[in-house]
Image (cartoon, rainbow, N blue to C red):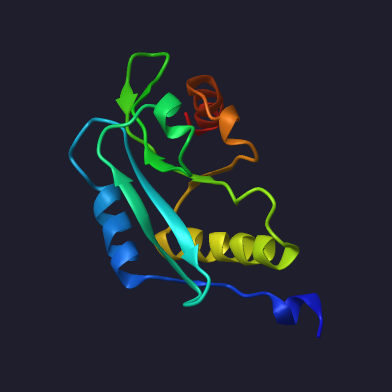
Length: 137
């Protein structure tokens, strides 16, 4: 069996797709996060947790996908929907492949544009996120 044949790409739970679309158009102006995980048995990306008001520092201990208040240098304020991908440290190679393949499926399904990857959750800081968002002026 070749590597491409063994790659498992998880589907995205329909309830999660609906929740993410609602999240994208929410009216609140606070930082919020939806944390997703892969249910390996069902081969499905599902909702793990939802946070209504959370700072980048508090989010460090979580696996993030978040809505972030971004203040531009010219004074404008926007609320970009950011997907921050992190896979668990120490996963077996086949699990790493499942996470990577499923990430792409999720990005396509929900039509995410601001997609960032982080290896060490300690690196998730306000400065890191501002630097990443600087490319989307």
